[in-house]
Image (cartoon, rainbow, N blue to C red; front, side, top):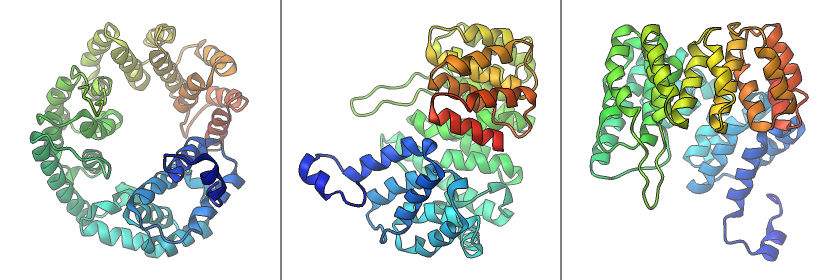
Length: 385
């Protein structure tokens, strides 16, 4: 279809852009494709002439980001470096990202542009932890400016779409480079009136994962603005549905507070709606102990699927961290044997740890026999890691 679309176009006369639909289909299938099929996809796009249309470039870039890093051969990375300059911005950066791990010139280009504060290159940085301080400072300064502009525009009811998430990027730099952190601008982003939840969620995702590692004064600084977002219901408009970040904000709060404050937070969330109950499961999975696994077992029987899957993921996290009581592995084995794709995915994703023990290996072996190709592949990749 990609190589010879004319016959289909003449027969079906579609009213949509066929390329975009095919790319969306490939993105959905990428986790199930064989190594040979992935190489065919990669070869096809590397062999294309330069893509100068911004819409096409952004669509193709999303597929490039979705392809597993292990699928790119060294020769592919060199070809990506050779062709990147001719493509429109977002596809160019996607190919630079692919090339940077193997091509010295691409890595040097990324570093040089980072030192200039060029934000388009941020996604091409393979590991932000390795950035030198001058590059971190330059990018943090530029991100602060972008956040200030975003807040000012939001106050006027003006919103942009797409591109780099400045809150996510600045929070990530702050986690790994504390001396260059600008948590004041993250706080401003989380508290400014008019800013939409989807503009705040990137920073919150970083804090949910890394918030517990921050210095105590930073945690204290962020607790109040994050607490306010716990009860911020999404705004429904004619043209756009806002993201519901209440559960995500609750997870961040669970990461920022100490154990004594976390326990009443979990109890409060357990009495809430499905968003809050799912958040409680994720918090327990990240910070809970054997005693709290009973709560996850109860939530695994919740009437709501998202709550059930969050609980299953939490239980598998406890297994991976060797904090699960006897019987949990048996229950998760049954889920992997008899459940659908979504519940199995919740279990397998919680087992992806570099130091899994015998219980993790047992569950991944069962997952590798699942009827879903996506689950089988995820389980095998985790086993190989």
